[in-house]
Image 1: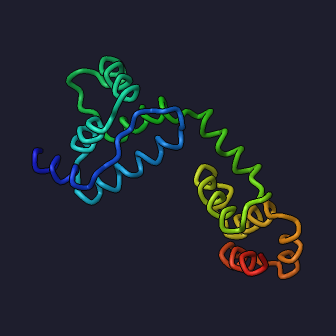
Image 2 (image 1 turned 135 degrees about the horizontal axis):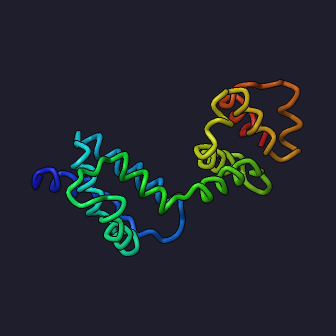
Image 3 (image 1 turned 90 degrees about the vertical axis):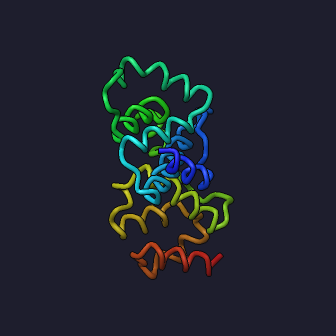
Length: 171
């Protein structure tokens, strides 16, 4: 385990302190999973390494969960850790708020590139709304400023990437 910890720490994994932004929880889990994949960790190793990266409120939450969600002596799987972690740090309500934010996203005064970055960032919370390439393109188009959108409607672009490229050119 010591060799694994040394390899893990060489990757400079981020710490998690639960500062109130639920999307930070998702980013942190994603970063942990990248490291775990690279190191080919087992479930037990993943949980041990992740616990080591918790700070402040997140660490106190983990200690409080030991007797209830994570019973003493029971092996904690990575899936159960992630489920409990998201239950605390990325609630269904917070996820629903991100979906709503995505559904209401508009370009407004953003440049096309900035709008696209925000679109991609928020779309991960609403995968069903963008899994079809045409639906993704329509959703992207509907949020664009009218002065750009009106030039993109006649070509009837159905591919998200083509639509994005044309919007960049128009801008």
